[in-house]
Length: 306
Image (cartoon, rainbow, N blue to C red; front, side, top):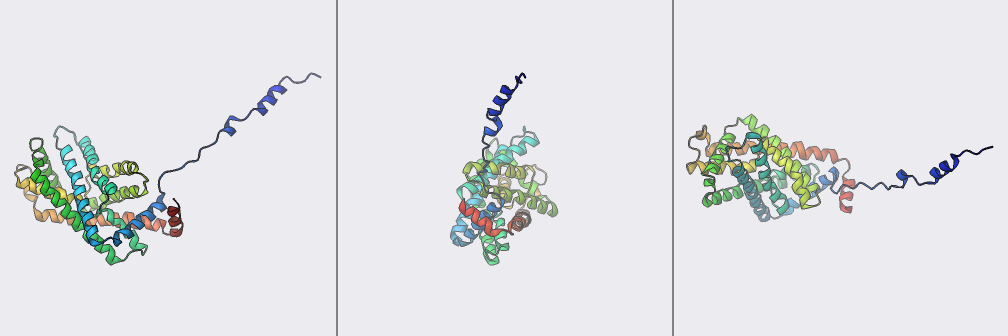
């Protein structure tokens, strides 16, 4: 009987190593903390913040107010060109503003809006309510003073006169757009703003390198700026610099310039602060604490091992 001629071929095929089986599947490793580990990092940082001396906290808050002010000034400079259309102007301005939070996260500073995340420490009973309130008060006033010092220096530096005075005009028009908001709109924009800011801060805590931090916060921060949300610390710069530019004669013919007053500015900052607290402390901090609270020991062990 004639043997099948296909048998050697079949034997050869069977003996040949499988291409699929011989290829090792590389392990997937995400070089960042997961959500639970990030929550522990946030809470640990919050505990450390309450252990700092008041003087250290205040100095770091001064830095943060100035850092955010630098980002706000960068925003004014890149958006003062009237030839730019609205969408690209908002996007470019948002990217420029990111410089402020990049400096805060990478250089180290105490930012009031970011410290809203400390509410998770209170929920976890890792800090007391008086310690939380004390930190918030010191940081809020430190941010304000830091922003005001920068405003004074910017005024003396003649920056408002750049681009034939368009920087000063933009400072006034930006401030007017903020003080003419109704309280409901202002509060809602404050909530939405700090949701994005605190998410950006969480991204920073989850990152393992400076490059990761910078890239991670670009879209959340530029997004809130482009969308016109209200950040109380940014407004500690935008509104005073608008008032100073107005006093220097810029924006005299703008509609609503009479509404730009110290009282209106303080009201804006106050309402924006309340909105920022709700957005950061309630929507982000307490929500993520609740999500991760059922396994605290596991996440703490995990982050210590990394």
